[in-house]
Length: 332
Length: 255
Image (tube, each protein chain N blue to C red):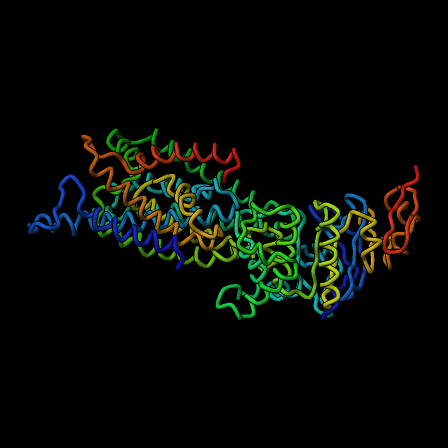
């Protein structure tokens, strides 16, 4: 347990109760609680807070792992193309979901999104098998090749999503799709928690197993192999870890950008800077960031709630720009 | 200590033959230098000897065991490989960097008298960077960084140390300093194989020199023989002669 872990765990322990009290209806913990307060807390705020923690933890850890894998502080878990593919699956559910019986309809969106994420993971694994059989033969550039393949998957899924939107059957479905694509945690229930929590946990475990190999990658691909790192095992662990954390996150919350990019930066100076020391605190810090952002959009005095995905992009894009400028000055 | 050998070893990269079939039996306790003009296949040969490139024909092996058949962990414990350049992705501390050398042993952490932490301490001491152990790598000079990267290899306590142009970016003093470290490793019984560009360093400090030209082994032997003016003219196309006393010789091209 290093100090970054302690710091963000303490912060999270502080933020969770605060987030439960904040919202359109403020709850005073010292006044006697009425039955409506209990309902708001247990059925609205608590699942939402837990979901924010789960989704944020997955995105933060995935970002830390991705930056470690690409040996680049500007890498984002989106580079694997998991999120756009999961979003494509979700958009497909707006098309086909209506045809399902109502009992299944509530599950159709996350299920379709998970199928989308699963397809992307399968495709990545297929590409990994091919690119690395050459990579092991010393063709080199295995990581770069693989990342470009991920980017292509992302842009293909993005194009198909755009197509599905333009061909949208009716205006209501269209607005639903567009709204959903900008991720949010509004009106989520325990159902979503039960979907996301096990999958994200499994993903975090996979990333944990990848951590030491990512450390060795600090010295470059060849040196890592000379240290006994199996590039194929590492890549499969990453596909599983990033696929599960990001895919499950999109399935329950839509697309939430920038968390995976920003969080490892905030955390890195507090750690030894090796990927293995970064993954756990990034998960904790990601949980804090999404929780704070989600509480903030809840209390902002706007007519409709600001979408969480939009809010994080509004913070994230300028931060990224600032980061680029700092990087140019070689300060990173 | 096991012998590292190549048996009719050939290497291909990107479908092109870069090392023609060659055989060499390397001995622990010696510094073997691989020399040759640019593009001669030196790095490829070194990587194949490190088990990082599969042979296109023949095999590289430790004693009787082909490297390709060794589990990656066992190969990693036996052969330390130092790639060209000093590419370190994250600004880690010197101690963490060196601890990466224990990756295949999995014992870098733990209380100080563990085998892993002892090996790291010895590696830091052997390369004279013990006092820099808490320094970040971005704060190191080129020479210090080269020593830290060598310490990373030493921390794994490999039987063989294979280094690709470890002296390339260093000034004269640091070159000699690093060569002294390699000599100490060889004296301790480890096998040392280094790719060298500087023929004078190879002549003065290697026990044995392999000369490659266009992937083919054109000379193999003690530096006096392998780097004879005749072989240098064949290999590099440069006529000249060695001047100076043994152990401090320099190659003087004829102009």
